[in-house]
Length: 212
Image 1 (cartoon, rainbow, N blue to C red):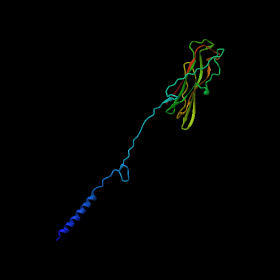
Image 2: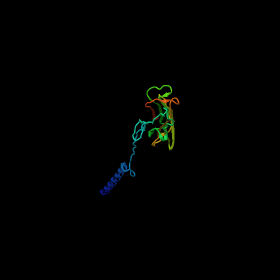
Image 3: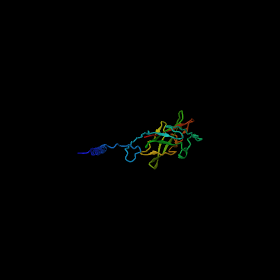
Image 4: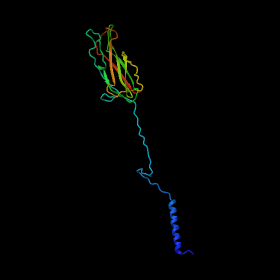
């Protein structure tokens, strides 16, 4: 027959064994490690930042504008005999206007429209109240790191004549000063030897630079 002391020892041993089994069966709890240390649980998130740039062209000669105006006052146009002076020319070295224009997109549309210089009133046979000229638009372009250039030209008319568009496929305007130059030459009356009637003469050159 089992003694009382022996029975107590058996009960204690059995209780200890049951406690060990219970601990072994209990699942371990995960510990969050905000520092991402070894063995911790972490997460990664991605935030996307977006924005847009609209296509535009701007003149940046000291100010930024989508339009510009300029006036070039020519000297006395007639000789002492009343005919148009020869050699009138506004070349790259003495251009009418030099600009810096920036466009945010490639392949900008570039062209010019030239209207002859005229004065009010009529002109009888042998006289002229109109001076025609050839206008030029010189532009500096770039593709990657390769610079290039383009020139548009048109002979003015009383109603205004427009050049063809520049070929700028895949090209940007160079981001440099003087990337657009306007010049003019070949000034002439409708007929050689015409005497210019007195008056204030005015014509225009309209420059078109717009995003593709």
